[in-house]
Image (cartoon, rainbow, N blue to C red):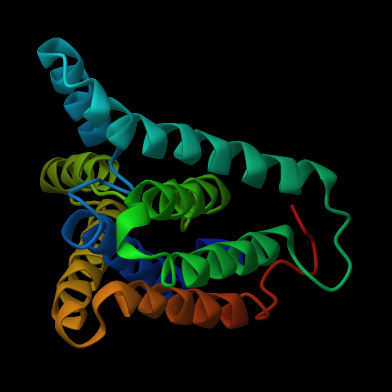
Length: 223
């Protein structure tokens, strides 16, 4: 398999971003009141259910992550449009902001889950917007449904055409899904010893990704 032309599309970067994505979702769901930091479809579903049942106090519980996730997308895109790259790629700045947000989340008291989940979803939205390709293929590091669809399509295409490229693409998507799941497993294991601080594993993974991005596969083109 060829190396990705851009570091932001590399397997190495996807590994740590997907691990971090799994940790974030496990944290928000298991530690912060059964909210999805990444899978906003689940939050919108639960928002609709609570609206239909008149559980008004629970509505903001699920609406807040959706709004913060959207704000994260807007922030990341704004950074791309406004940042004049010199020594730091705009995606690296996104990673730094994500890491800071998640460190803050780790020290938000238990009674303030609305704030913690909002900040976690803000970080997730930024990551979704900034990292959208793997070896030229659309993918996500904070959720699995799109990866599952694309990976399954590629494997079926390989079964029909026997094109090696389709097989490699399918395996790449499967790899990202496995990494996300491993992140969720690791996050669940860390709850026991770390409790609310479990989320601090995510900034560590993001800082590894930040370092990987200093590998210049883009010929110093900051697109």
